[in-house]
Structures are given as structure tokens and as C-alpha cells.
Length: 494
Image (cartoon, rainbow, N blue to C red):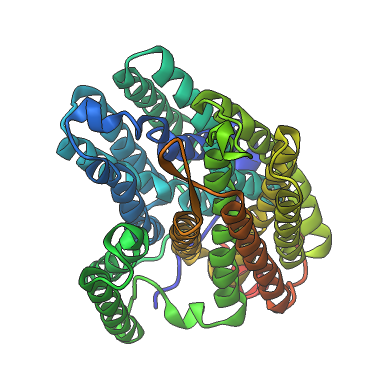
């Protein structure tokens, strides 16, 4: 495989207003991407009436975005490594903005689903931004910036729900998409102004066959996981999708191992430091997502259920707001722990804190204060864990593959979240009781979901501790000229 292009002194280290705003601009874009993923949630109960479609059809506004994000994140990450991270970042954010404009202009459910598919491209913002930060920042600034960038996923999700709920409740639902379109356009402008193009490239030919194979395999896998509850886990469609996913992904892996320049370097993934980091990301994504899903439903359950609080969607969003603020404030702490103890310790600690948060949820899920406390503890652990994962990847892969490697790591989180959604839904469906003539999940069902998520978090913590020890900390970067990036890779633990 060809060596990455040489790298000169990091531009962001030289000062200037644009350089100082690179990190805030990328963090803003990451937060907006996460907001975009959650803005349709308050709309889902009313969209069948607003679009003249069924609830099952409307659910594809979430499913289509999930599938698109899962497929495009590793593909665009690899494209960024090869053709320029800023260029691909601009393209993905422009697609997200175009999707918002399309949603604002139509009420046709087919067009809305297609527009949400376009928005899935924005999921690549986080891995591309982390790779840019590696290339542009000196080591002493890199850790905290990467931690902040990784935490924007949880921050945006926590902020997006209440904001969208307020807009939907007090204005026309198209206004919400006009607002996100304006924010997206501002993101494109800010990227063009404040984010430099990374000088590190991985030259070669893009693996189109690998991209198509990965797309087909992931679509089959995630369709089976996300639709199993509706279609039936033993139905012909789900079993056929599972068989197709296993077959296609096995053929894809065979092709990747023989490709001269593969989309995903599976030999690199097979290294314990990289592979175990991806596995920990899968379990952490599962554990994190159950908190948001179950909390939102639990506090909105009717009071007649014996445990529900009957909150509105706006009040529900406000309950999750402390979690987002906590993730924002704790990102620097995660970076400091990683600097002293190493990111694998931070990851293990974060996963253990997630488990502790679920213990709080199991102890008391009737009192609103305790619900918020438990959810915030889970968010605290998520902030620590999510902030540590990119640092593990950055220390383990060559500079020319950071965007694609982080894209795979984000993909594993996405698969974990999809699995979490399916498991939580299955648990709650099987533990219901009639309230006012309608089936409502029981408190036991929620507690079981919390227990499963807590157990998975403990598994993530155990996996983190098996990751090989961190390489020695990087020394502060001195001024260099035309130093090959591959030499930096050797120092950073390649």
C-alpha cells in the first residue's frame, strides 16, 4: 500500500483566528449532525396523519437514515483519507443540508424518506473531523479536542430532542426543517472558512467493489436487526436477510483481504489494539442507546400504569437535557484521564460508570429526580467512553487511515445502537399490561432492559481492559519540514 503524503508543521498550531476556530467549528458540525438524527422523533406520532401514510411507513424516516449512516460512514471516511478530508466533509454536510431543504418543501412520505437517506451522509462528520484534528493539532491540544469531538454525538442527541419538540409543538413542522437547513448552510460556510484541508493523503484507487459489498451486507444486517420486531424474528424475510448478510459480508471480507487497496484494512482491524477497540465500541453503543430509548418512553407512560409520569414530549426532552450538558462538561476530564492513565483505562472506567448508572435506574425508576440522576450517570460514563475510543484508534493506525478507521469505529457504535433498539423494543413488547384498554410496558420490562444494558456495559469495560497497553505518550511536536507521516505512525504505535 502506498505511503501517505508528507506532512509539514501543523497549520492549526501557527495561530490566527481561523486556526483557533477550527475545533469549535468541527464540534458545532458534529453536534448539528447528532441533532439532525433526533429531530424527527417528536414528529413520529403525527407524521402518519400529516403525510397520509401508515406508522410502519413513517418509521422508515428513522430506518433509512440509520442504514445510510451505517453504509456511508466507513465509505466516506476512506474517501476522505484518499481525496481530502475537508472536501468530503463539505460534501457530506451539503447533502445533509439538501436533505433538510427537501423535507421542508414536501409532505410526500416517499420524498421525505429519500431526503432522510441523504442526511445519513452527515454521520461521517465525526470520523472525518477527528482525522483532521490529528493532522492539524499538536499533541498537547489533540486529546481534549478529540474528546470534545467524540462527545458531540451525545450532546447533540440530548439537545436536539427538546429543541425539536418545542418547534413542533408551537409551529408548523416544516419550520423545523427550514431551521436545520439554515444551520446546515451555516456549517458548510464555517467549514469552508475555518477548516483547512489536511495535507495527509492515502493515494491510490478507491475500492468500489468493496464499498458496494459492504453496503449490501450492512443493509441486510441492519434491516434484519431494526425490523425484526415488526416483521417477526422467525419470519422468512428476517431469516433471509440474516443469511444474505452473513454470506455477503463473508465474501466481502474475502475480497478485502485480496484487494491491493481495500476499503477497510482487515489486517489492521485484526490487530488486538484496533479490533478490541471496535468490539468495545459495539458494546458501548448498545449500552448507551438503551438509556435514551427507555427513559423517553418511561417518563411519558400514563400515571395509571403505576410508575409513569405522563410527561409531554417537551418535558421528556428537558429530562434528557442534563445528560447532554454533562457530556459537554466532562469531555476535557476524559482527555486528562487518558493523558495520565491511557485511553483504555478511560474507556473501561466510562463503561463501568454506565453500568453504575443503570444500577441507579434499577434501584428507583419512579421518582423523576432519581430518573434524571440515573440517566445523567449513564451519560457521564458515555462521555468518558466515547471520548476515549478515538484516542485508542489514533494511537493504533497510520495517519493515512485515521478517517476510515474511525469510520469503522463509528459504524460499530451504530450497529450496537441498532441492536440496542431491537432488544429494548422486544423486551418492552413482551412485558406489557393493559392501561385504558391499550398495552403499556410494565415497570418490570424497563428494569429488565436496564439490567441487560448494564450487563453489556460491564462486558464493554472488561473488553477495554484486555486491549494491549497504551504506547508511550507522544512527545510535544517540534517544528518539522517534510517529515514523512509514516515515521509518525511508527512512533504512535503502528
